[in-house]
Image (cartoon, rainbow, N blue to C red):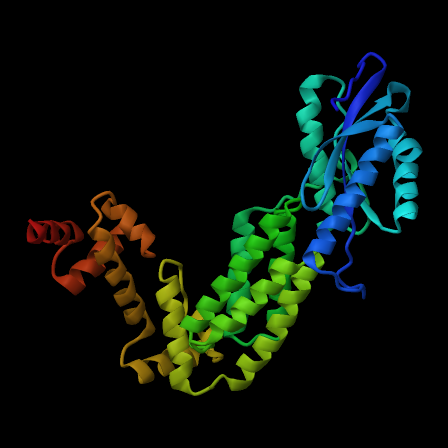
Length: 369
């Protein structure tokens, strides 16, 4: 039934309601059919109660909630959640022996804003994933964090490097990344879960490349992601991932060899992954867990070349690949492979290949024709 609203005396607001489920509570298990039928019956009773009170009519429902489009007198614009809505929700909870979640959208003074009220009611309902409580008003719960994706990338790289150097703060750094994920995507449950899954997946891939994880890490990673998908709150997402890395890093740090050859392989892997950055001996020494002064000596003894020569070789190999793309200018390639001065790049390239980058590109083109 479509709700009739006289906007000269009333305003509209959408309310999204569903049953609260505490994943930590010990409750009798029910099969899927029983759960669905029980939820449908509950939604029917909630809808009927609002209709009987002449407060609103059901707009739609899904597997987790139903939305009701309500109308309230203008004189209750400021206090309708506490004076009218909350007592009805509490009555329904008592009658049905269930705890309800309630998300209240933005009030609408005309038909043009009804869609906004409906959408924000769903957003408010979803805040139970992020905050304690069961009664959320969208206009009072909105949060904005001044965090960029660049901040997240910086913290993510810091966390990974803390693992490489076996820092005792590695778990804290991972926790910091997870908190950034929560803040960046506050209000969007699916975005938090997907970002957290991508984070752990990328971390596992990099740890495998560096030799910290065996090839059979995939089942372990899949098990973690299943747990993350089942999380009912952002705190559970953090808890599942935190517990996973506490166990994983303990095993990695216990098994990790500290021989010079293995340490240098970790350093070389780091260079291959980060050659475009301004890498210094001090950065690489921290990964090898040695002093900056000793690092250069150790690297040359193990590889037969200085770390600067190895870094240059990696950068120029990457440059050769980029030269095959005619869309990149020489100065752009120079920047992409870690040179902040194009002249230094050209000279290094000429020293290794005996020609300038532009001539090398021309030879590649001629060879393909």
